[in-house]
Image (cartoon, rainbow, N blue to C red; front, side, top):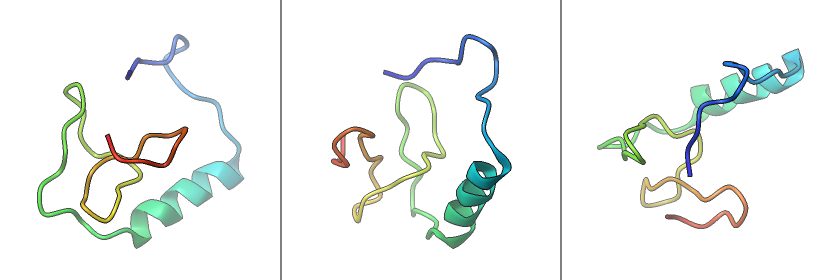
Length: 60
């Protein structure tokens, strides 16, 4: 399930922001960006370029 945060933003430390920026900079660009409930640009993709489920690390 994908939902907008209630506050309009997700508070995070500079270390977390830096970590996310490194992940984005170092990941390969998928051939086709997968869509989940109308959203693209998933942060974590598996070897098949499918979004990973946060709790299990498995593809959806």
